[in-house]
Length: 200
Image 1: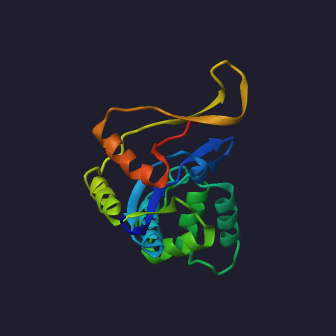
Image 2: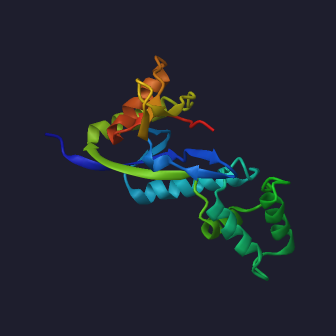
Image 3: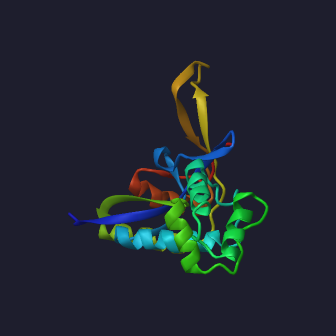
């Protein structure tokens, strides 16, 4: 029997807009959107940080699906005297007020500092233990599938007879797309299915 090895899947945050904030449901969902597969948690978390900083540059408030916690943390940061030089503070105020995106001239260190202080989350890490050959195969499948076909995960609040469910049923649309099938082969190692979106 093949020896089991730890594997760490970096997955995109799947959030749902409710009232005025985005609620993060990623870790309670059957569907996940993989962003990378790693041999250690440290590698996965470093990749999450790198990809988040890349996504922040030039992004506006809604692009990043900022939640209430991160917004309050940013407010407290902006209210701290001397925390930023005037140009950086003005950039963050424009971002928070939804008037301007984060400018492209912000450095990785500046964006990393903002990330550390606000707890902004764009990725999560889930883990499992699988045979080494399965990890190698999954990595090759991800490398062969750079695109992410849109697959919705919907929440069904009634059963087939029309009775309201105490816990909504998660429904992921089926697809014959070979890219979706490759991604499902990866996510199934972690007990999940591939999906990219939630209903508004």
